[in-house]
Amino acid sequence: MGKKGGKKDSQLVLRLDKAERDAFVELCKELDTSAAREIRAFIRRFTEEHEKAQGKGE
Image 1: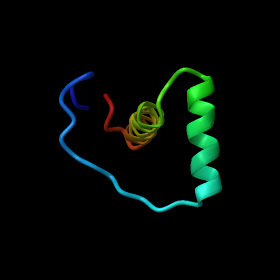
Image 2: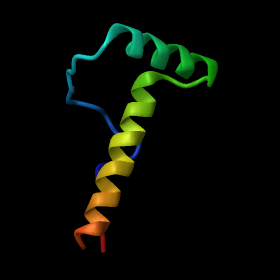
Image 3: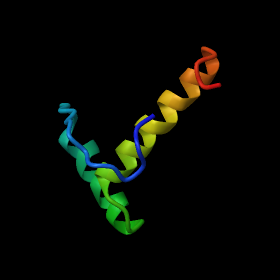
Image 4: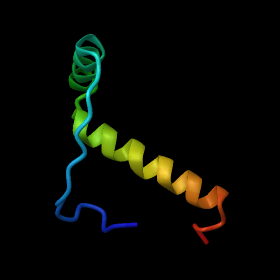
């Protein structure tokens, strides 16, 4: 996987329901984090779990 804290040079654009987005952003603010940080963490966990399941994370 990439370096932790390295320069981010790619974007992922997605469309989602405004109410869901607003609720997510508000919850992130309440938890003193950012939406981007939480989405990056989700992507990192998701790919690590699936690499392990496929035997690639060894």
